[in-house]
Amino acid sequence: MAINYKDLGLASTKDLFAKAVEGGYAIPAYNFNNLEQMQAILLACVETKSPVILQVSSGARKYANATLLRNMARGAVEYVKELGYEIPVVLHLDHGDTFELCKDCIDNGFSSVMIDGSHHSYEENVALTKKVVEYAHAHGVTVEGELGVLAGVEDDVVAETSSYTKPEEVEDFVKRTGVDSLAISIGTSHGANKFTPAQCTRNEEGVLVPPPLRFDILEEIEKRIPGFPIVLHGSSSVPQEHVETINKFGGALKDAIGIPEEQLRKAAKSAVCKINIDSDGRLAMTAAVRKVFTEKPAEFDPRKYLGPARELLKELYMHKNEHVLGSANRA
Image: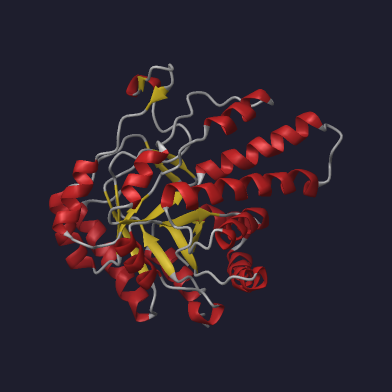
């Protein structure tokens, strides 16, 4: 029997996106695969009074089990109440690639799904997205579509090269599919190695600076579909302090470069109302765990290394909400 997201106490993106567009901020969309990640996300968002989108990829569902994740989401709502300040919590499928996957998530209580047909031809993307929208809307669930391709690797999403979203396609796509939000490609990419050194320039301090996001494309899209909710994927900034910690304690991350936070803040003040961040969280957790393992090699209690990882992750997400996305005090 299908489970409605409202029965789990989850929120819809519809009203949240409208408020975000009007308020000039973006709602954080943080991926989770386990308990510690979910705890860090919820603690950070409750303490900063930020709405939040809990994202689950197809890889996360395989890793953690779909039933367990659904019940974790139910528990997340109760956990938020216990923390003393209720924030809206959305459960979202990240990068769904088939109708069957989206349907299964909708039937299992997700309040939002993404159907990523960007790897298909334009007409195939339209047809697939429309099919998902029709099923989702019949159950009160919102749908995110995608135009343009982001390069990089993240879970099952792999693309060697990116292609910018074509502004001339967005009106037709939105009208024909009925999507509730649109993920676009303006220069972000998946993973921690978003750019090669050859693509970057060096500032006066000798630090590599990646090419700027294509705000001209974003502005043209906004003109064509004014006020329509826009989404940015691949928006981790790859904090160098975490990269340095990982490498200091035995890691081998080379040329890990992300999106400058000031560019994401600028995007969040536009119609971009949802920004996806995953790799930054992975880096923070890995940095904390490596540090414990190196400084305390006899430690074998998972709580003693996952606890510090959870705390560092919480600090990272509080920073994102307050200084990057502008979502603090918006719940």
